[in-house]
Picture 1 (spheres, rainbow, N blue to C red):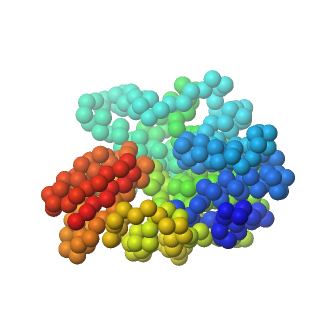
Picture 2: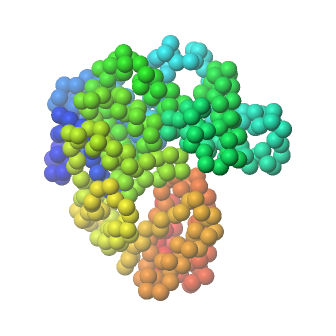
Picture 3: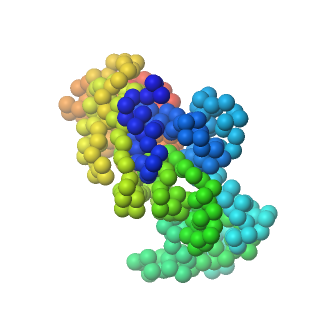
Length: 395
């Protein structure tokens, strides 16, 4: 506990009600989560099997488990659940199989399986070749969005403005019927089905609220509607939870993430306590100053800043740092050229620039962005020093 700053300690010790921890990058949020788990077990005498922590990636879940194991002996952590949202959803479906439309040997369709199924359904409507391949990509996205927003097939048509999109609502209904016929679920169902079951079955809801006496959620700003509803049903009106997030770091909008879920917490849990971690342990003062200048233009749910530096970070010789915000919805060529021109022209490029890449960027044409950024830099006689997660560009 002595290794935590006062705000981190406050977040760790507060267990009497719902808590939102606003934590920017490098503010030690993982330390808060893992030490809070240890505090609940060791100081609050809460059985480990009554604590659940969820996050978005397997890597983050593994790191969280590893950190907790360093704080407590293995016998103290037996039964502790630390998983991704989807792993938790899968576990729920297996536990509560009799309350689902599934049989015991149900299968999980990956994205390729879903595409093949939709292609088969579209072929029945005499769509073929390039046209169907283009439509299937749009169908996958629209069906996923409907599911994540908890919109049933019979209601999907009401959300459409373009009559030409009606085919996707029809495909949604056919797709769901075929999933059930194959005794299968897709990736979205691992969240959506448990959420619907909890919403509709009060007895089951009470059972799980009793089972999970404390819930911790990492990267909360990246939750979608279904994930938020799941959290609400699991914690109940008492709100025994801690969620950690930062609305300036949301990276899952492409799959339905809604940072405004952070604001909804205040409406659904009026006794919500908010603790801000604004002490940064990772970056230099210059980087923090530049980052604050960039995010100042964002629409904020909560007023905050990136914080002041606490521990002197390694110097990279950067006079100025600019966070490159990649517009993944635009074409890589157009977006990267625009961003490069913005930071590499005029007074902005009199010094140096730091370019950082979020992990999920790798799935969205990040190679194209990197290649074009590198080209733009070299074309302006700038030196680029590269690492896996960031580049330093020198004038």
